[in-house]
Amino acid sequence: MKRTILDCYTDEPAGLGVPPFIGVWPRYVAGLHEDEPTYLTIDDIRLVRYVECVPNVVIDPPYGRTHLEVLNHTRSYEQIRQVLENTDELVIVVGVQTPGKYLSARPGTLHEVEKLLRSFEEGRQATQDGAAPRSYRKVLTGPVLIGGTQARGGARPQVADAEYFDELRPFTFDTYDQLQPLALKGASFIRQMPRLANRIVEIETGRGCPRERGCSFCTEPIKNRVQWRRPELVVEEVKTLMGFGARAFRLGKQSCIYSYEGGDHAKLEAMLSPLAAMRPAVLHIDNANPQMIDEKRTELFVKYLTPGSTAAMGIESFDSRVTAANNLNCPYDLAFEAIRTVNRIGGFRGENGCHALLPGINILLGLAAETPETLDKNFAALKRILDEGLLIRRINIRRVVPFPGTPLYQQVGRKFLRKNMRYYVDWIEKVRQEID
Image 1 (tube, rainbow, N blue to C red):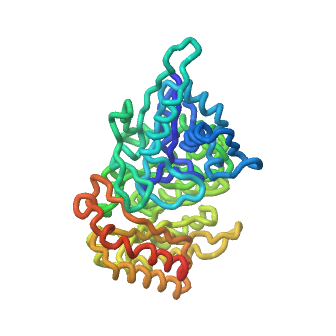
Image 2: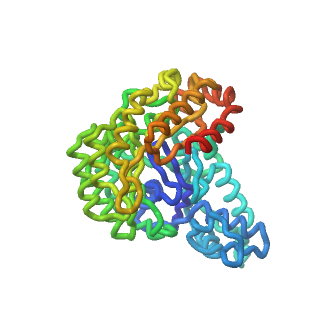
Image 3: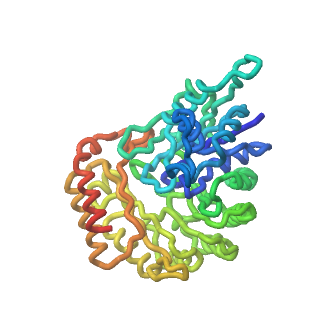
């Protein structure tokens, strides 16, 4: 059986697979199969439709207009079409649950995937002997199967259509010992991915939310129970990936890297030290719960990570009413304490010219109990950070998507989004002009 994996790029609260990042989902799915599948991206499928809808089009420079999708093509139009013609099973990886702005790719939505594939199917030519075109099974997998997907902040989530796809196939595992053989086998799959030298490979270090009750909007608590991947398993996968050409890594797929193995400093160092010894070009981290940020762990990250890393703090709101109503992980004063700690230890410039480790601030609009005054409080907090001379790598502002199964969806849905939407554009522009 000839299998093809169609990567529509994933973005979860605890995992990123949008270029330049290489997510875990395509690699794990590839590791399930004895014979390595063929890799296609949603941009490959877009190219097929684009070429067939626009006659005599030239899409590659220097003769044509350059599109960002060109970066993510795996092969030519003719080769992409040949792959699709010969495919027996198309495994489609979909799932954006923390939609944002992307500089190197545009994730595929369920509606787009269905539209593109229908267009391809309708345009297939009969074989020379007059027989019907070869058919293939369409299998949907990825984060989309739990909660849905939505690439546009503030919009309603899209849920999988069981009538269009031949199978909805969840990918699950009970322990990281079970996952390890699949992760190692799927490591070679990155050789098919375009521009590997410029890609950052997401490495799973844990899953689930260690908090007793998660944030109202987050899908991670409803997808996974808390589990940490042992240091030697992480190191083994990175070593294998480096053998296939990967040079840049981000330690992710968890809700808080500072909570690794319950916040055990020794186990954290047991993971970081051998990874740094392999001298990757990039070794960064992702999510950091401000409540867990302390000097010791921050010093370990600064010691072993390559400069330029970000401790992404999901503060989401500096309004105490919103924090309480949504069970957010960080009160106002604690947020500032965490920002100061990371600045004090990681605020110097490393050998590549980047600051060693800086905070990233996440702000989420449309949460329960939000009012216009919430925006004022958020701006005042950001202004205070600026006035204190504290450094921030980036400020990520998103509009919440209430996904089915989350407390936010069950309790208020899009109520506060609809109520306050008219204030967002001006407020975001004010932050970009006066704070950024």
